[in-house]
Amino acid sequence: MQTELKQTLLNAAHEAGQVIRHYFQGNFSVSNKEGINNLVTEVDTKAEAKIIEIIKTSFPDHDIISEEAGELSQVSPYRWIIDPIDGTVNFAHGIPICCVSIGLSFHGEMIMGAVFNPIMNELFFAEKGKGAQLNGQPISVSEKSDFRKACLVTGFPYKWPETKEHPIRVFERFILEGLPVRRLGSAAIDLCWVACGRFDGFWEYNLNPWDIAAGYLIVTEAGGRVTDFKGENYSVYDRQTLATNGLIHQEMLDLIADHSN
Ligand code: IPD
Ligand code: CA
Ligand code: CA
Image 1: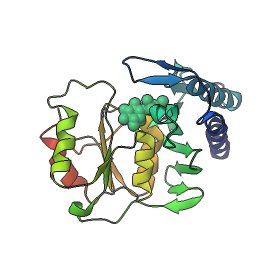
Image 2: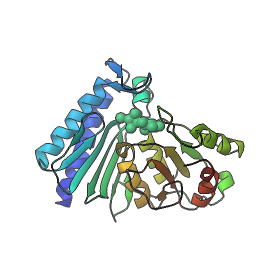
Image 3: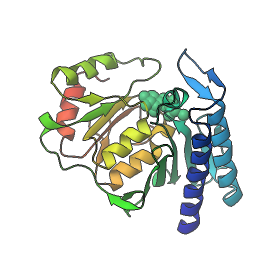
Image 4: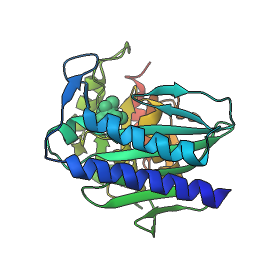
């Protein structure tokens, strides 16, 4: 069963990646969801259809939740959590930081995840209890313990959430501390780049489970720590995500704390 799940996951990520690569910097239609820059392209829909077709062929009775298609519930303990393109704004502008993200949970626990950036040809994969990989090689989070020297990444929602403080205030606080903070535009890639040690920490408000599911497992299997902004246990359905190498987690919590709900 595990082998078939893994094959299906990797096949779906690969096939969706082929669709994304085919259209990258080419012609495709773009439309808006809510708000003026919350985009969806015809490629999101095409890649999503391919992923769902592959999963349904192997596992017709599994639950699926996917960003554009919504919830396809079968009341199964297995649930596939799909973002056909994470980083759609990047993709629509020909910026090579975009990916397909597919996570799989069993009775609510993440057991497998893949994040594939077909433009950079980087496939991140993790299986519960078996570590994380980048293109088949084991990866681990950074060993940076000096918070002052950390390199961080964050993202911003398309619409500001009803938080006590504006997320931009938290961002400002890190910047005023003199820390380098990047904003790549793909939460799934942000998480994977923490997993492989390029970044030491990532935080973001108001992500959706499809942005996080696979990346969450990849970071934790790479030895990282993921919590909410209070440092408590995390679920991919939470609205606050802090992912670090573990060593700078408390310092990041301290800086975020005053500014979260
Ligand atoms: C978005 C990206 C971005 C994050 C947004 C997400 P999408 O997903 O992950 O990095 O800041 O909150 O909605 O729309 O490109 O799938
Ligand atoms: Ca997304
Ligand atoms: Ca998306």
